[in-house]
Image (cartoon, rainbow, N blue to C red):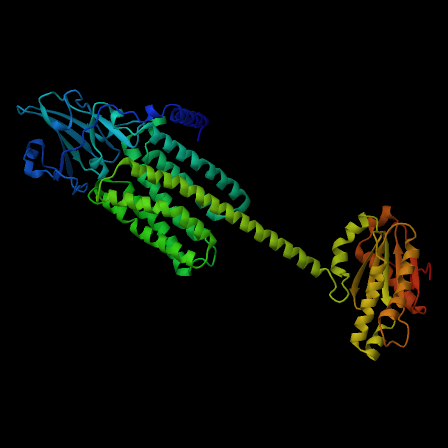
Length: 580
């Protein structure tokens, strides 16, 4: 919406609200009473005014209204107005028609006629109504006959009035304020939908935004609020109001199918709900266009084709609530008022009875409440999705931690050190100690794998017992472990770790007839040059030193301090023993 129109809307809302608060008496003011039809009739297109002077043609009760005939007739008798309040305007509900003709019939047989085509109607900001000028009515006028060619709506007939001034039959300012407030109620959910869609990227949120736009359009056009801001042709308003309702109801069914939890609907019900949404947009939407060719059927067809939608949507909600859907309970609470109000509008549209404008107000209010409550349901779903996402992320982090933990010893594994190695180097861990238990295969062969596992656990406890902020231990696999260190005296601390292993195994593992020692290969690279080596480079260097420690009697540490490393490590035979 452009800023001038938005500013005008906001200013009007503010003015209407101020008027509602400060001058409620004025809001309900009425001028002269309007005259309602005394009788009505229908005919083919050949009948003229002179043919309708026979009283036998008229139905003088509030029954059997028809908008499916080529011509509908209204008769206003003079006793429905007073000499002091002679009407000058014809006012009725905005609806499609071809032409409206008037004949003022005097007592002496004089007949003054006036004809207006559809485009002559003037909507005004007093509800979904338009007005036409009447031929002159005098004190001698006995009746006003109205001939309406190809009417498309029963309310065009049932809500027709003759008035001194159009404002006499306009909706009260309180009613117009209510419409403006309903529009205001719909703006906030639309903003929520945009915000939620940015975060969720859920199709149901986009569909709800389309619902809100459709309902806003419906309230603006069906309630006549659009005429407060701009004067549009009667045919355009007459089409956009029912079309926006059909689109909104169809999108609502699609929204329901997408919004409910996966197990809230059976497969066939979900398909039926989606098919209903498409049906509602296409079929009632087609009849909402009110073509001349469909005039005999489109009024009733528009309302009747909503019946499958009403049935399927109600059944879908009942099934989802029965299945324990939390979302369905929100939607059912939101849609119950609008289903009831829509049923009333359907029955009035089919001509079962005639009701006051307050019934339309109930539909508009139900529409506003429905959108707000559905927005609350979306917010609830948003929170549920966020909780599910947080739980999934927590579980993923737990699984990630488990995947980087050795299940036997509880130490971090090779995957963990490879993933964290660059970070460890940047934190200053520049000493790499590779540890291997001596003659471990002999322990498994002689005492069994259970004792061997106990020895590995004891070794891990020895390494974990020496861990601090300057050293971290890992198990690479089998009987091979790694300790990375930083800070001063890293070589001496690595040797202390190696010497702690036999003591811890002897203390924790029973049944061994010999000490279980460990050999170690230690590589140190100055921190400034440490990023020149990868984990594999460190491992290859330390593995060479470990091999030499094993080859030269085991139970010892071989140590090497490197400078900047630019070449591949030399063969094992060229490795240099620095300490043992």
